[in-house]
Length: 161
Image (cartoon, rainbow, N blue to C red; front, side, top):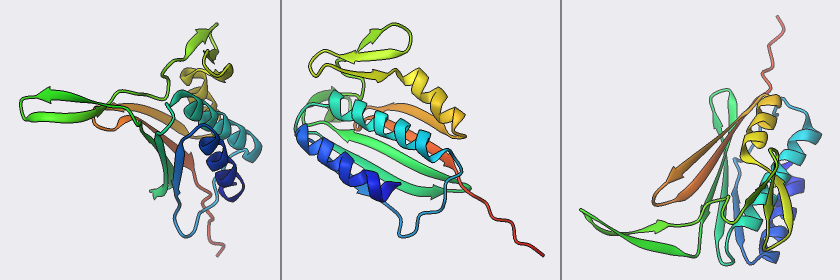
């Protein structure tokens, strides 16, 4: 699935003036999930991310093993950072998130006025990942902006005796 989607996601990002870096392990294990639905949910999430970041931003997707799960971590590095003074001195803080500029349309959808795109809201997206046997966690990190972490179940093959 990644081999098919990564080039498309990179093209989509470059059309919006973004860069997309995908870090994959040498060997990807099989994920236990509905491949069609997983493809649609991941593509929808990437679409929302690419439409919500300002041009010049960088998106990093890192895929790794985490126990009996596959961990996908999506992190943005917006072009626009803001300097924030703290007790330890000034530091750069990302001022953008994956939901920047989105307006709610009912209980399920989000609308991006600048691009005209519609996407599912984060609550619905989390529920979809849960239905796929996975989990989506959204965290705000002051110096890194918003970080999305997705855990997906891996196929566990039992040895026949």
